[in-house]
Image (cartoon, helix red, strand yellow):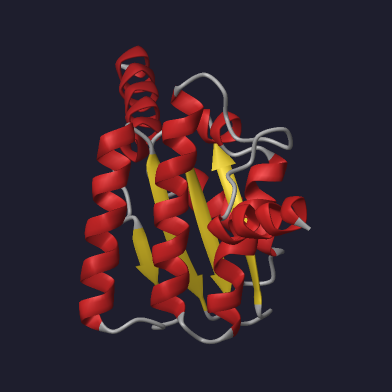
Length: 179
């Protein structure tokens, strides 16, 4: 009888560890800080889902009023790791508590988004964040992620030697060359 109970207990413990593997992932947009209207949320979630499904990796946006005592880095990393997202992805965290943001990458996301690429990405959407245009900032983030993942899949991810050029940069460079 003791052997049967021991086996049942071991089976129960084993199954309890397997339950999180079957948990459904959080949506790719989690607006805890309520920065977006319902219409903006629906449009952004649709875009994030389309990009994520197209590339086979999660592209996520999370806003938070509080980081529960964690650093933005730890909060973003933990949110991605413990909420059922796939092995490959990128998460943008916007913390209202700290007036800060952080990007966390996982799996192939680490390859697709180099440190230089993340800095470039931040430089693209932060002006909109600073202006309070959260929907615009998240739209820029999503579109830029789509381009970065596409570029990485070509075998040459954006990095310090080949970051995308802005149209203004081209015009400025052309003007300098002409002078």
